Length: 455
Image (cartoon, rainbow, N blue to C red; front, side):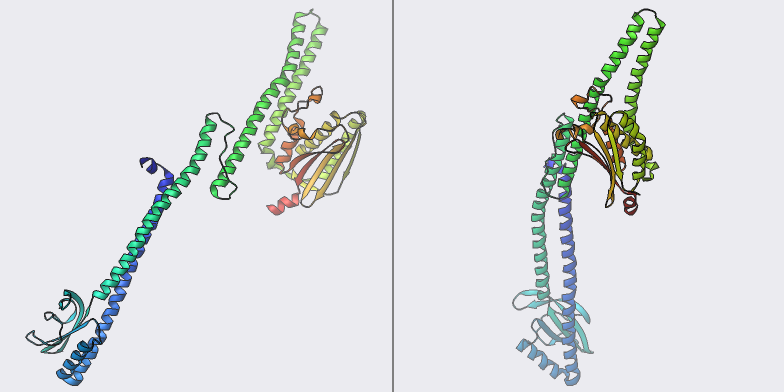
């Protein structure tokens, strides 16, 4: 039991149940007193009406008329539950059969002797008819007491049922809450213990726990992806740095151990400088991606004509492509405006053009297209080269991922990852499809007008 009270889930459930019980008790108390006051008010009104009628008969017919009416009421039971008495100056009852001592004038709760039940209580109005006559009209309180008892019994039964079902419901609710929360806690503890594949059990429902479970699982999947990416990045960085660093060390060692020829030493230093530039370029690309993913560049976004930007870049890039014995063409729709950073978008387009040129054979046709559809703009770079297997589409946008056949080419496998990061900071996406033959890479961005409307 102490374990139950230590559980917040059970405490919440029992507090909720106790709150309902208190509300039922409070409602019952209010209803009881309100009904009792109403019944007693009706009782007083009946007594007052009966007393007024008898006083009127006394005023009109005197004591004989009053005595006759009292006898008739008692004999015929016209006023069921009523009792009557007329007292003289000396306190002796001169009419009626209400067995009680002479009370004071006014409203009274008096005790009388019931022929069947013995001593009982009644509500009474005592009226002075004359200096030597006092009229007492009383109504037995048993009916009101029975109604009060019935109300108390009903609400006591309701309170008891509320406590029984409330306690049972509290155990069920507390157990449910505790079970669902322990599933989340168990998952967190398992992950802390090293079981990174553990996930929160979730069902296809749409309640809060199911949504929390799915959100936590999505977060854990994302963390797992990041950790896997970090592991892959560490491995790939080590792999890609080993060769240039080894080559640089070998060239420096050769220059130091070789003949003291200034020309040879100069050549060795020049080669080492080239290798260091490649390493600096690698780290600059990594820092650039981190900066973009951090979102700092989004603060300087401005409207950009994407079609005009693509045309300028294609025109500038055309001689380089033709020198590589490849063909470059482009087609754009005018006035396609997006909100973004010109330098970053230029970098993304250039990376796609370089990617198409580096990883395709001579004679490949490269086509760039900028179109708008609805509230989205798309810029695609398509080639008819050897393409990429569909199972590798998702891989080639990760950092340092280069397919085996591209390991011999220049680069560090960061080009498409940088493009993906640029698309993401512009609220867009990067998609890769097979062009059959070749590859088609599309950057999908929201139009500037769509962002303005959404704002």
